[in-house]
Length: 347
Image 1 (cartoon, rainbow, N blue to C red):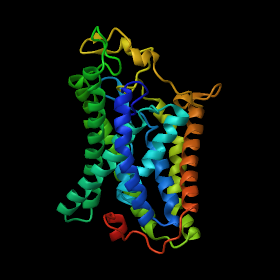
Image 2: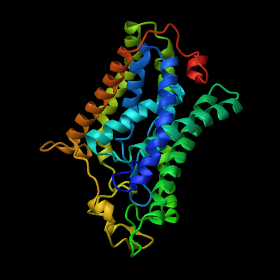
Image 3: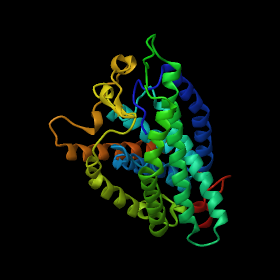
Image 4: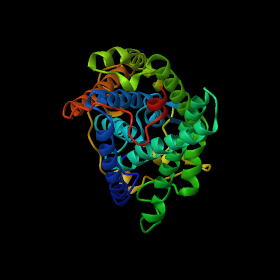
């Protein structure tokens, strides 16, 4: 679901980035009001989970690949605004260090995965949870919310892709950016996400949601740094396990839909025929030089480079939020603000 460089026009990128500015502003304001500095590392921890979830590529129908995002999970545990900031940081690290998602398309990727996904997933969770009067209802609601959330995000990405050839093309009618219109982009994106990718998001969300409830039920209420470290130990262990397991994401063959390189898009077969040309912007557009393109490191086996990339992403996610937390004023209460989740109010 990561939109690469040059698949969206500069105008589209600018609009999507502008749309995210007030969302980020509100999210920062809400988190500053409700999350004390002692709990800021939690945003980093779950940004790390989101980062890792997106490294586990899975095969999708049509020969493409996809991944979970974890935005709904973070929204259920920490609130949708916190989820917005956590996923934003995960996406930023992926774009700047690994070239996973375009830096010009950063606003669009954040709109889809850091805004639409967690906020929709969080809202659906509460609707379903209220309707199910059973102790296990929260897990069913988490699954439904995460499924709807990731598919809402995928639909937004499909629309952003799909409007490009209608708005931006040359005199010959060839697309300048993404060459596939809405009649192709929407079915192609939704087929994978309504099936396997949606199921992966459900499994990831429900499994970690249940894990946190089981191992750290007082997650939101640790009294101090020492207590927090002890309470978060199972979560750190799970992070370590996932880091070691990330090479499994290399087993999925194929390229995610809409993420083809300039050297392969002309040969992509859609509706029985190859595209036959490379859109001008994709062939000649902006390209950011990153340190570890596609999570590779020169001279290092791919599986080991993948693990090192996971370590870097996880470490930076946690460190960034620790630094942010260090500059905040201490608060005496957490979890009592408007719109707090079930984890905050019923554990």
